[in-house]
Each structure stands twice: as C-alpha cells, then as structure tokens.
Image (cartoon, rainbow, N blue to C red; front, side, top):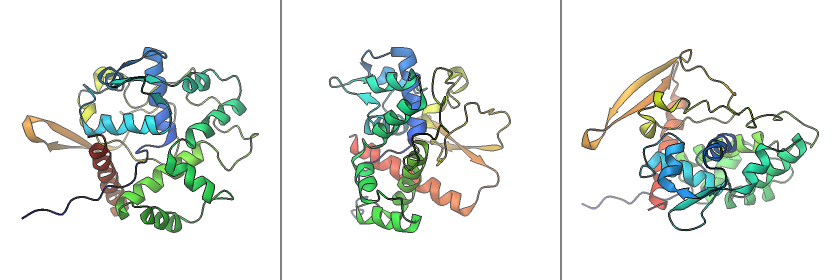
Length: 253
C-alpha cells in the first residue's frame, strides 16, 4: 500500500534572523568572505558535515536571509553585508542592514508588503500561511520564526530605537556551539524554537533541561533537550519544527 506523500510547505527560514545572523558571523570569524565547501561551513557550526537534516536546514535559512552566497556549486561564502553589519559604527546602519536581511525571503517580503501598517493577529497570520501552502503545524512554526525575525529587526519601530545596538557584533559569543568540543552530538540535536533574540551568554549548566536519547538507524543517537515544565503547546511547536525541517531537507534533495 502506497503511503500518502507528505505535503511540502513553501520555502521559508527555519530559525529566526537573530539566530541565523549569529551563525553567519561565526562562519565569518573563521573564513571571512572566502568561499569554502558546504561541509567546511557546516563544520564551523558544529556539524560533522552538511549531509544531515539539521545542517541543511540551517544553511538553507542563512541563504534565504541572504547571509550566505553560493559562488559556485558545492561552495558557500559569507555575504559582504554580514561583514558590514558586524563592523557597522552605529545602530541606524545596523538596522538598515537588518531590514535588508529580513526582506530577502520571498515569503517575508510578501507578508511585510501586505501588512505594511502592522501585523494582524497570530490566528490571521497562520491562516494566511496555510492559504499559501503551509501545512497547519508547519504554519505554526513558520509564524513563530517570522514574528521573531520581525521583532529582532525592529521592523515596525523607528530608526531611533536602539534596542539591538551591540547585539551580534564584535563581542559576539555563540551561545549554542561554543566550545565545539563540548558538542559531540550537535548534528543530531533539534534546533531550539525561539521567537525572541537570544542573550549573549547562556550557562548550559544552569539550564533546567532533560536530555532524552533517541536511537536512530545505523547505531546513531540523537538527543532531545527538553525544558521543565514541558507543556502541550511546547510539544505542538516541537513537532511543527520537525515537520518544517523535514520539508527543508526534501527541498534540498
């Protein structure tokens, strides 16, 4: 009996702009603007190679935001605009660059043009995403990522708002993959879902997380990092994020 094929949602970032930008700057700190193979780029983010769903999802998100260029097949390089953002002398220039990144994904550009005066309710936005081809659960995840990105870029704020000044700049410290030696299972960890900018420093020793092992084919193992308490709404978001990752992996081949 042939199973029903999984519906593919439209292409959209799987992580918000602040997290994508953190990873792009981490790559820049290793390679500057020089091209490198996709495997090397993935290794800079804590993965063994680009040949897994999580790495593909993150790299695709960085490309959707225009943070990575593909100078030729199999090669990636950090976009010049990332360098400009990292060394921007003032918040207004940074905000201008952030707005450019935010408008790069076609979906985001369309939504921001349609709702130029301000975003509608979450229910209305989710309905819009479903109408555009997202499965209901994938729409929930895409909505969270979209709103987190809009908030980080301060899209509906004024140029005088400096709430993000200094974030992800010269003093950037990666809160997820540093140090790399402490992350032997990073390639199998489901990325966290967040609609807010991450703080500059996170103490993983102080985080109240349960590590749940998941056995995979070929003797591999994944780990789910689950906060306590873990609500039903959290489960729904986690499932929606996994569905979105699977969609991105299918699209990348």
